Length: 431
Image (cartoon, rainbow, N blue to C red):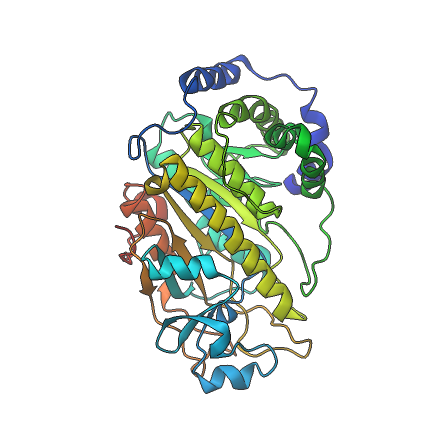
């Protein structure tokens, strides 16, 4: 029996073009399309619900070279070749600087629109990409949950919602979308990207689609280039075949219907040609087209920087920054900037010391960003000690579920306990 991931990569897209779409789903999207008719963009800021964009930095982002303790001698001693100097950083606070590949995030921090959360992790951490990603996606360090934290949010706070309450732009549906009833929609179809870019940019769109569905190639400085890492989510308990049928159906329906809605927005903002910029461009179009979606999920892969990290890591952060620059400018032009918050995460940070290949290996605690006009910017959590370590790794001081509790309660306006199965203190970075 093939796994779900194998099913998706080898079978789903080819099969989707010949399968029949159930009538009730057609009606759902027909209603959406009719409701959005003549609405080129969201008419009034704050008219509809808030939106969360979850942005995965897949592969284990090196938080120490992202938010850098540049005045700490232990940092430079541990990283003699790949350590960042103070002159090469965007100063955030005393002794703390942001990688200068991210000028947009640096500007947002100064304007109060970026929260930097330091020392984020979980108890008894696991250095496996797949296990640790599963922990973050399920919000369950014991790995016993068969649903994801976003899927539980859908089940608990969005009963009866349209399937597009959650949309993932990915090769596979993230485990965080795993739900008892409504796991959202996963988009990855050729029609989607042909449609977005149209005739003049068709070749570029085709290339992007091909990259989405091709075997993962190596990235310079990285051991794997997974655009996403982790288990595949879905309806809890469904069979592989049922899962395949549903996801294939999603891909076909959404490419034909959802994108008709998104087409109503013609952005004047220029996006880069990177996959993450294209994904955020698509999210922006769907927001402008007035989709009822509460959570979008996108991935930016390649952060598994075991060798020759310096250039590849800076490049990945620069791609992230460029994509977010266009995305937030687009939201502002639409009048939707106050409705959208972006939260990044990565399955783990890297070890404190560089390795013999001038890269870094799998570690534990790291940093993450929460960005957007609704965010109360600043630095949250303590920068972990570089001398008081756990087997050579940073110790966490912020449980990642506190970040989730904050966005659930103060942004998505729902109780976090039913979603997270426990109470976690909030961090105060929203509103």
